[in-house]
Amino acid sequence: MNSEKNIIVRMMDWLVNTLAKTLVSLFDGVKNAVDHANPSLFGLVATLLPFALPLPVAFMTSHSAQTFFNWDTWAANVLGFGLEGLGLLVWVKLVDGIVANIQSNNEKVENFVGFLWGVAIAYEMLLIIINVILALEDGANLIYALALLLICLLPALSAAMYGLHKREVINQLGRESQEAKEWKERDRQETKEREEREHQERLALEERIRQERREDAMKRAEMKLKYASDTKEEKFNKDKSFRK
Image (cartoon, rainbow, N blue to C red; front, side, top):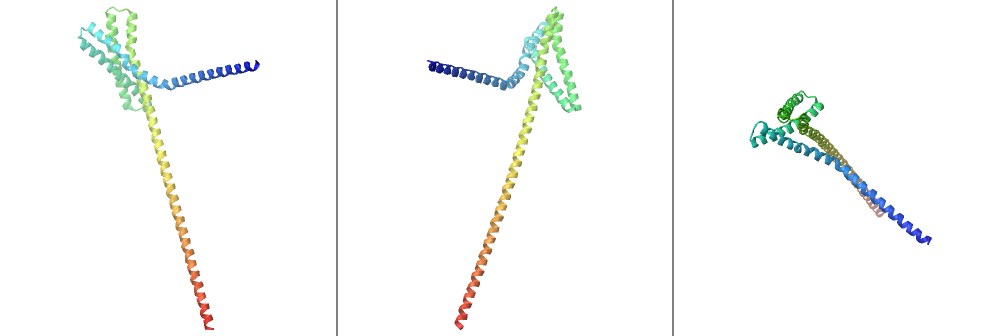
């Protein structure tokens, strides 16, 4: 009976331990997958937001142009989407220019950043006047106007974040390219050193073979000389004995 209980207890322990290890392995795998996916997910969000958030603002600007200016639908849509496209370009380039100016302190970059600041301010002023100021003039309450103001700032914020992400990607690609060049240069240098070492080894081997051949030739010459000397001495002894 005790033996049966011990077997059952051991089986239960094995099942519990196996289940615990399986859960730990599963959660570790999920954690590693999330950790590895976070940079890609952040990059995807940073890329999509600057193109998604301006869409409602573009429609809002188009509606304001139709309401306050009595524009046709096509003209109001061109204004709304064109204005948001301009805002996306200027804010991305502005953030990129600010980061480049911090890294280089170039006067030309500073002038370029100043120009972009002027365009960005003009874009925001036009956007706010069309969607917020005219709404206030039309009788909108202050809370509604404040909400419109914050909404008008969303495309600029998303474009700025995209500009920062773009600069990070460019820097990362530059580092990877530099590392690839350094690795290629190290590989080329190692290949060159290996070829030079093999060449020196071949030269040493050829020299050793030539030395061995010279030694063999000298030994053969000595053997020939010795053989000729022995033959001559033997012939001389025969002649001497014949004379006697």
